[in-house]
Amino acid sequence: MDQEELKIAASGNVIDRAGTLIPTSMTQRERWHRIFQYQKVDRVPHYEFGYWAELYAEWHEQGLPRDIVNEWQANRYFGFDDRWSVPVNVDILPHFEYEVLHEDERHRLIRDTNGTIAEINKDGSSSIPHYVEFPIKGRADWERFRERLDPKTPGRLPGGGEQWVERAARSDVPVGINIGSLFGRLRDWMGFETIAVMVYDDPDLIDEMVETMCNLIIETIIPILKVCPLDFAGGWEDMAFNNGPIISPRMFRQFLVPRYKRIADLLHQHGVHVIWTDCDGNITQIVGLWLEAGYNCIFPIEVRAGSDPVALRRQYGKELLMLGGFDKMALLRGPEAILAELKRLEPVVEEGGFVPHVDHRTPAGVTLENYRYYLREKKALLGFPPEECR
Image 1 (cartoon, rainbow, N blue to C red):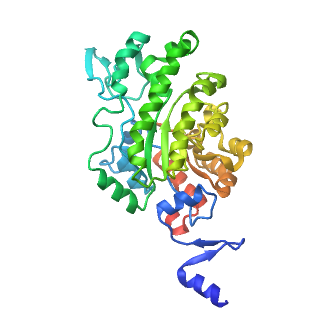
Image 2: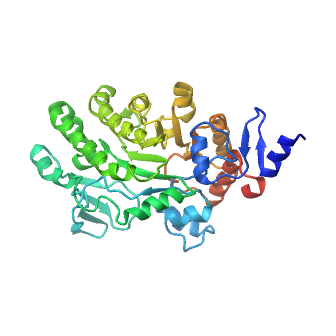
Image 3: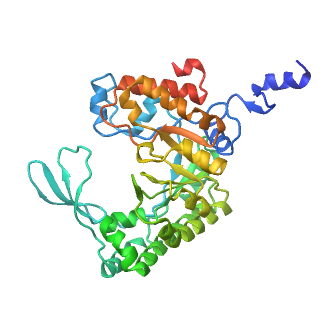
């Protein structure tokens, strides 16, 4: 061992076969940056994507401590990595007042905080509500509703600004910011049928709505970007089904791409280079459009719906960053299926730019034993030391 190798050994670092120096101990923040720049890491970041509400009761009967009743507690119990976002509000403000309009033995008719009237289950079980009426049905409703989307409304930025700057600067875990939604929230407020028709019947109104959302996001995040060191920006859309997006790629390009680009350009100017949007369903027709606009990361890559990290990496190469992509249905089928799915993803994990985890919330019916097996085998894939995998 020569003098240089002795120095490297003493520092606790290693050199891979290509001669790359790899620290053997990194902070979570360092791993985040390196994995998304396709650099070597001591291990890949370890995240997961939540659980169905019914699952906690099932797992309590199978050995999960009974004081673990929410996602935050479960994530810490299982030992996942952490990340946090500066709390900005790029949604409606103020929200509507939640009201119970009617109830019977099984259901409640409520007006939720979006202003939507819906029927929900009284027992709290997970189910898509039966929507009765949405707050935006046309231009007159929009004119009243848009008052709740004023970026100058007090409460959009967190109080105690300096503490967030200091906390972000000294954080050992990735720090991000919420960049909201241009289309998904409009669909929430209008309903699928109304927005699907309105892009044809009144494209000018849709354009005005999307522009309002874009301005809200930009004007709200600028003050934070100017002072806070950030590692990522995350948005939400949910604008796709199993057969593809709600609107055509042509309309996506017309209404959304220019606005996404304005948001992405602003983020890039302030050193934020991991920009994702959260969209379930089959997104294969619109991934390239997000990339064109500067949104370079996708989440959660729902495999059963037709989105697949292996195929997407083959198509877009290292231009695309990814979070998610493990088919949650394998957890229901047991160890053999779980291991096969991890092996399928292994080449993409080894390339970098990809943090694998369940492609949506872990569903009811997954046994705690199967979930523990999944975590053990996944940690081995991510590069954890053997004793930590156990």
